[in-house]
Image (cartoon, rainbow, N blue to C red; front, side, top):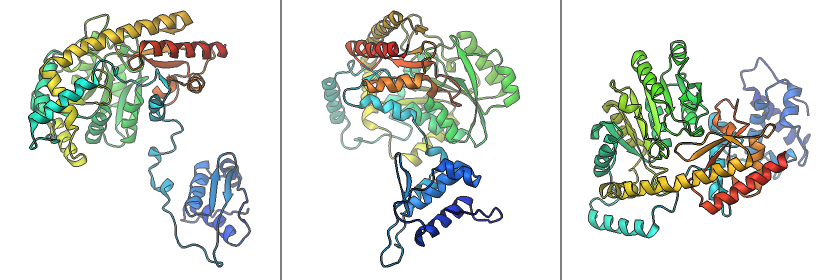
Length: 481
């Protein structure tokens, strides 16, 4: 197969390559069934990047000239009728879709979604326990809500969120030292949506964002897809290390700082009071917004909850995101954002553009449960159940001789693996045994760490299933030694 690239041509190189291969197929020089060189081989032969060959082959695939099959590479599979080429051509989606939205080898979502497969033991996904809220109780309450609301309100909520729920959230925030009225609260479906919307209105391509490391993939992907340049700050048992942060701020001039303040995902660390105060000071001194992400501060088992960063904010520089994902019925997810009026007004406008309405049913249900005290009673049940599961998981990890820091709250344990054990290989081996967990490398934006850690979650499965899952982990680790 002869291909000559004209380096002076204005035609993209991948199209030059695709056009010459197409011509050889149409002239019969490359008949059906011929296996083409691999992407790597052809790239080396032509002195181009492998991505260039990938795009050329994708072009030929979408036009029906070649096909790809696992283990056989690319094969000529063109068909001709009456000596004429078919006129119909497929859209080349592979070339149209932006690069950052494709070609992910194993995304966080792929790993996370495994928990829903039948027969799977899930120690991976951060999902609330399904046993605290009774399905019959929820069904009965929903019937009452629909009867009370009537047709005029059915399935409708303002763009900013249900007014009753906003009032209840305002009261809830006062227990966390945050004073916020209706104009400062925006309800959204989940933390991911909140981050996506905030990044949309605040971040421009090329802006620098400072984040913890390790960090939730959902958070850093939101920043990456917005075109942000991510600078990571390491954490220890007291959260984001602020010792050198001021020098980094002066050097990098970030557009914002993102921090998961309480029972950090994945490490379970708590940002210390001293460091919270330092972050507020840096924010005020250098006029940098802070996004404080919080889904677990209510799940405290060993100590009183620390004041939120937002409660210390006197300059309206802190945007606070709270999620009910771990403290409400699974599948009924809601989150809210607290911020300056201008930010909330912009978020509400974005909701009006992108969404018809925010989940009416979940808003009404949560508002009723917060109004009659059910939510707070159930919150105590979540604490008791999660603490019991945490203690069991930690006891079993001790039996295995594994290193970890026992979390004082939240739902995650960050486990250090024995020397020589690769977390991704371990995750794959466990999955073959119908157990899911998360490899630590997915929490590092530059894929430069975490291969010696795994994240375990104890919120979702029942006690006996956690026991069973940890037995599988123990057996797989025994074979790794």
